[in-house]
Length: 76
Image (cartoon, rainbow, N blue to C red; front, side, top):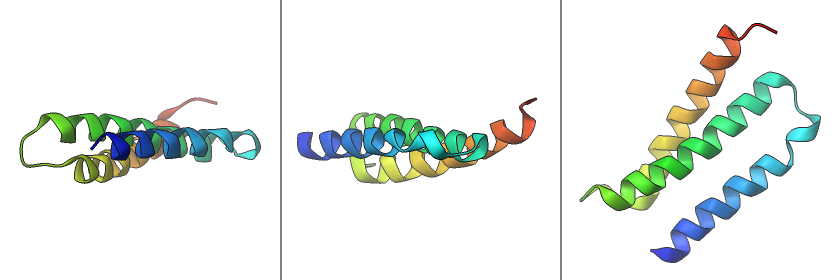
């Protein structure tokens, strides 16, 4: 279980390192995905029957959608 959490955290950080050449929409989607995956992994560890991987996947999807919505509503 500990290795899964560390793996998700490492992949989240790896994704954030490539943001320099992205536009605002791409940055918000990647950031939302990483934050959502981390939060989902924590929720999966705390909610009985959910699982860390499942929580991370659900959180990543929700974070990506949230990133798109935030980008569409943001004033540039």
